[in-house]
Length: 385
Ligand code: F6P
Image (tube, rainbow, N blue to C red; front, side, top):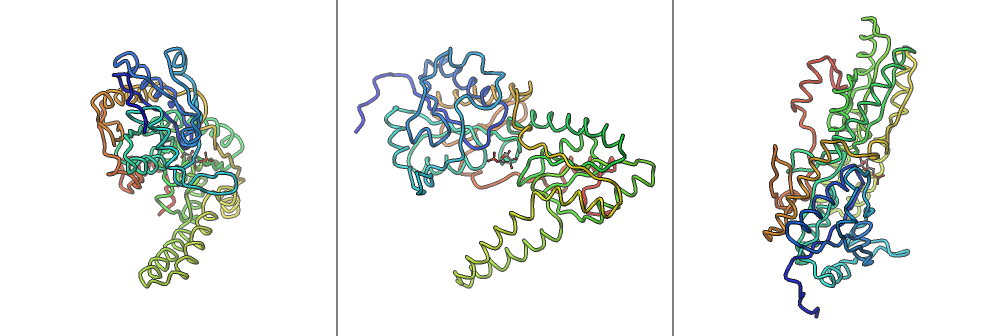
């Protein structure tokens, strides 16, 4: 089918998929420089995630390509959230797995390295099931990938969010206001919790702990009574009220019962209802601020940090982490160790089997040391007075 590759050395494919984050280029550089300089490997970069691999849009990397990218934000390869088996092609969603597998072999790849988050792990596992050699590296500002101590992108986003909270403190205290700052993290609260603690937020609301708005209001009033006439509320974009969380739980239970009773139509209806309700239950920061103003009679304002947290040059910690993981990745390729995520473990790295972590998300445990720290310094987490 394809002629045997004549080069004795290995060929590595690299793509970046999912949301971008600072540190991706540092990781690409770590993989590429180690592969080329240590093991004389060929390195091929594919543009825009799995779509570029499907469309065979690529670049053969050399040392010039990798020069000067360590400090660049974003990804020089571009990214997308496209999935190999569900790709928008014109007006249709098609399974393009076969084309991707064909291009993998056309390039005589010995391994495809996918830099991505939870979604990328699923896509990597899917390609492993087609017999491809795949390695992933854990990237996301959310820091919610199971099996690794930390993901690159998180430290930089943490610094951006903390700097924002610092700046919001001065204007909130000058105007005696509530300022609600929305921080990224659609499913987990690591970034909000970490930056809320580091920035000294008075209230921290995360998806893992549905909040009671009365409790939040009371914590603001308690501060006012103590002479602190301003409050900073750090809220994750995925945080929701107790009421919303309860409604979601009811819908989930009803859907699961319908599935167990093989009531397919009802299960589908409930699944659609659940998805719609979840979508409107989060990202309610503006409404939250307005309701807190009503409850406390303290003027409120909102700042949504959004994509600022994904942009800019990577922090030193993220550059160090991404380079470490990238270099370790090429060592694993040299050893022929595939089907793994290169996880950060303490000062070192560990090869974690992709199929052990795919589909899992690292939520914030409600007894996590950071949670206990926040409570110890008097931060309200919106759950009880
Ligand atoms: O996964 C990282 C992340 O930034 C989340 O925090 C955020 O909810 C999501 O990506 C935004 O996705 P997109 O870049 O597709 O809008």
